[in-house]
Image 1: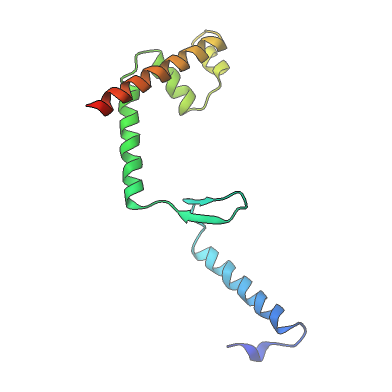
Image 2: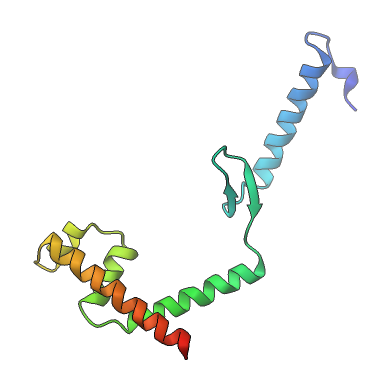
Length: 125
C-alpha cells in the first residue's frame, strides 16, 4: 500500500477517493464501456441483455425480415428500404420517385401492410 506517500494535505478519505477515481479511469481505458447495456431513466445500468440466445434470435429475426422485404413488389420494396433503413423523410422519398410526399406516405403504409401479410404467412408455415 502507498500510505507512506500520504502527505496529510487532505483528509485520508479524500485521498482514498482520488486513488479510487484514478483506478476507475484506468479500468475504463482498458475496458471501454460496453454499448449493449440498457439504462433506465436515471442513467443507471440495468443489465447486459446480449446473451447467446438473444444474439441468435436477433440474427434469425433479421434474416426473416430481410427475406420478407425481398418478397415485396416495387415500388414498395424500395420505399420500405429508403424509409426504414436509410431513414429518409417522406418528402425525400417522394422526390426520388418524382412523386409527392403524400404518395411516399401511402406507399410506405401499403408496404408495411404487405410486409405484415408476408410475415404472418411465413409464421403460419
